[in-house]
Length: 522
Image (tube, rainbow, N blue to C red):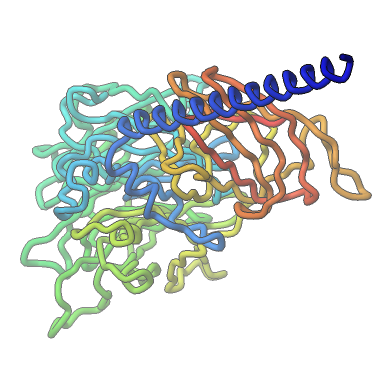
């Protein structure tokens, strides 16, 4: 009898366990189905361009150019503020969303500017867009916003930020803010520089501003371009002193006689010398007799001991991107200094063909080292896809916006600067992460710390869940530091193990229906 009872009990337990396993499998299948249904619903919310770039745009691990993969950007303007580099760009993606590369970039749809920031020059955070022109923009009188210029100046004891932009080729506007990322407002409600003003006749293209705040706090604005029959000395560039408020003019514009000028004003002060730089024009040089003779579409430069000139031609420096990357196009630049080194930001048409565009003119942001000779001259220089070396390391012990990366694969970056996997296992890579510098996990003289912490993630609501995995070293076989399982809640955490190497590249791998907002290790 006892044996019979035991057999019945054993059979019952087996049946219960089998049912339990079957129920778990069914629940797991149901959850997987819910997540996949959620993924398909979520993917419908992203644009065709966002998904196309996520799938096909590629940057190799050894490359730091283009600076940003997930957006087309042009005409960079650079601000170094609070040990951070901010870059403001013409939003070519706005035109690309409209055309999907089936027509050449006509720029007419562009009325926003893109902003990015970095503390190390290789890992960049998407800071969103600035709505400049049109009914939704700060400057409702403007139709377009191209080729920005940026500076900061202390006004009434407080740092103010001034963003100048071109309304197509017909005027220069200005926006102001108390923060480098906005919000920006239009302080004058009209163009700062417009047709009909004194000394503007002969400026064929009233665009491409550059700005300099001199050592004494005085601001200067540079702009203009274009030519007609006279292309050797078009005399279509201007410079002007700004008022103390940076939103008014303190004198009439002054002509700059830049040989073979086309567009793209730039201004720098090195020592006591002012450098005016620009892009030379595309007019054929066949049979032309001129001194100086300047190649087509390169960055040329002039110098003066006075910010309003006269400027004297010295030579040219940056080759056209077509000599480096294939497609030729206009050349637009900004030279800046960061932590004692000089760099040049520019653009190149380097991604459009990779993602299958049949037409061109869609540009990407690039940065390379910039050399200034001991005698102050600028040598002829080229850009590379390798770009610049990382300046310092990346700190993971602060809240990191999700759209912060050096490069990515199969990862969509949304208009809200969140990230979402186009496919399971999509990832972003952040280079040179300093894991040993955390407030509670310092490294020691005997080697890196091996203690553990916690990683917190914030995700967007309305999703079914999935996982966010953190790996060090490489995507495929890198050291797993944490795996955060995410449900339908908007935040989750998991234990985090520091990697064996004090400084490592970090891969954030996302699977399922998860839209990452930010993350932090502590």
